[in-house]
Figure 1 (cartoon, rainbow, N blue to C red):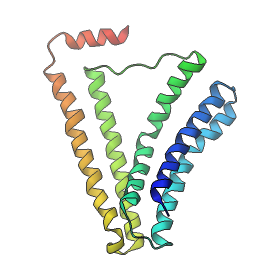
Figure 2 (figure 1 turned 60 degrees about the horizontal axis):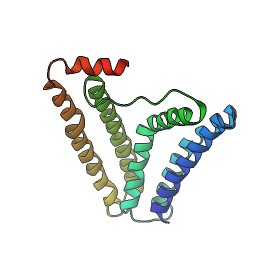
Figure 3 (figure 1 turned 90 degrees about the vertical axis):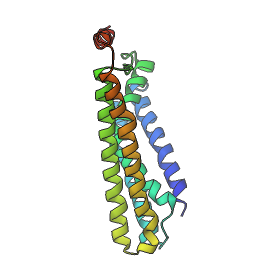
Figure 4 (figure 1 turned 45 degrees about the vertical axis):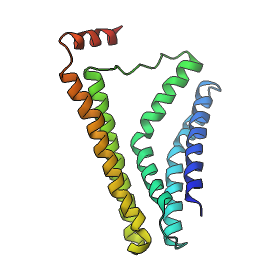
Length: 193
């Protein structure tokens, strides 16, 4: 089984279902169909997880890079999926249904710092989910020689989480502390416009 193809199919499926649901809501004015389509998004994650588990347990495959990537992809879609869907929904409503324009993230200031810490929190959630999935599948397979690639993904995802921590929330927080006096007020007044 080609797990890369399954991940790609799930990613394409995510965007097809998302845009199909939004098109049904805003262009066709079919709210029930839209809701039904958008509720199918988590089914793609379940399908991917089932394929990975089946490939390693029933088919007896040895875990490779794609199996680990699939678990991390699952963590990412659970942790960041709602925000992605909301952002695309706001854009779609603005573009096709005269909804309000999407708000832009300020370059600095308190709102930017808060945004970066929330995103890092989502990354921690992604890492926890990926770790649980990777560890759970490794435990179920119970053959360390076949699941070594999965356990190596655990440290990879936490390494990315650590780099993200330093590169974004810590860096943006530190930069906001050295921001010249009065610039915070200027940023706040720009947000109110």
